[in-house]
Length: 162
Image 1 (tube, rainbow, N blue to C red):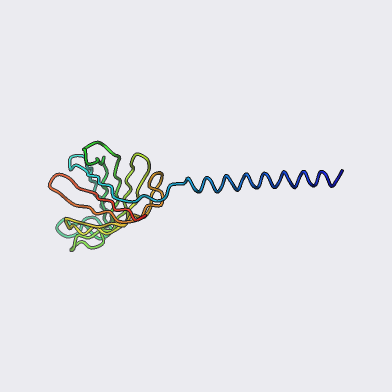
Image 2 (image 1 turned 60 degrees about the vertical axis):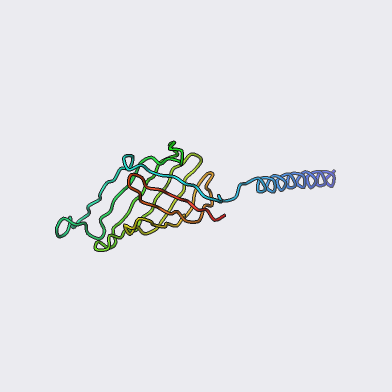
């Protein structure tokens, strides 16, 4: 009687383990990979909200910001057709006042997930930022985002490296 129960237990454990293995293998095979290709978004100047962060010591000579001050940019972003696609949240810390440079991070909260970025802002018309990750449809995202300042809009071109 003891040997029969041992065999039943061994067979049951084997079946459970096999079912678990099949489940793991099949779920891994169905998981989508990181995004590839490009994504183009834009933010209208009238939709962008800008907030300056003046930290002590308060503004320096001639009312100019000091290194360590910062700014926050928020607001909706749109797809190429002009339809609302999500929201931008970005925080920058000024690192060089004379050269108007800042280090920043940003999160694009989009339908289907988020994309995070990091990089330097130098007040040039075109800036490149590193895509540092994502969630949802953008899980595992990496690549670059090119920011282009226009007259009334800011363009964001994401280039994903799968």
